[in-house]
Length: 325
Ligand SMILES: [Zn+2]
Image 1 (spheres, rainbow, N blue to C red):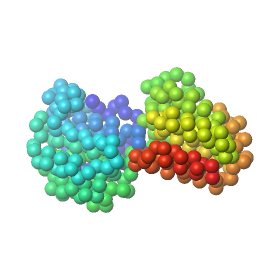
Image 2: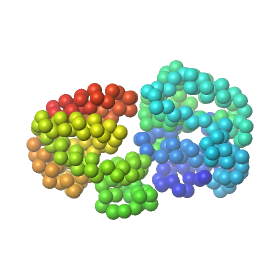
Image 3: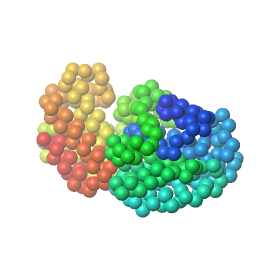
Image 4: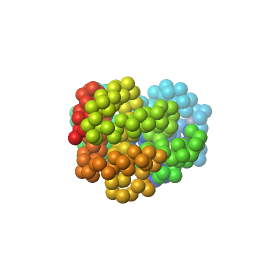
């Protein structure tokens, strides 16, 4: 296990490698950046390197007890907290705290990863602070978050912050070609959608329905803005049928409005959906920029609400009302 196969995030990786080679590892890290940008992948590689008893040249040995258990997902010195629920309560963090008192079993260190760390309640964050204030020497806590600002200032100030950046279009293309292959024009389109996010790009590329869903939405979206009742009902039904793909659907809708905005400002050469140029140009003529921005905001709000596990039906109904204006 090493950082070699990971595209991009060189700044973050160099920082972590340096702290390993100089043996100056922090007790607490915050990895922040958008979903799918590689926070979890890099945190796991880093954890593997921290736990391996015989790492060489920036790679784990793959043979020591810690490495073998890590590979099986049963290393007791590695705990990763991820919850589907809306929040991470104080009990889970107390669990970390009481576990951290026990010395590591197979390594020099113990590593705790908290995914979606901004889901921690204030009480949970305060509890974590106690571990940050007097950490046993072997403990490393890595908080992953899309929302750095919403962590308590006291937590932020005690952890080393590593910010994950968006990937360039070329890096996304490179990752897509390596993992997926196939027609370059389809990959270009997907890379455009993913907006610098490799995890999102791979998810889109692996979703066989992506093209079909995009075509269908491009049939329905123009009718929504003009309040055509039949299209509104059909879109409502379509969103209901494709519930499990709502993230992708909202991204496609967002890209549609983003392109309307670009087209209405006369920059048609910059469309994400360049193959749907006619639909975009026709509709851009009938829309005011301020109205398009309202739609973009409404979809952004729906994405946020979705992450907070809002009621699906209410969320999509409300969104459709907003999009009709
Ligand atoms: Zn090892």
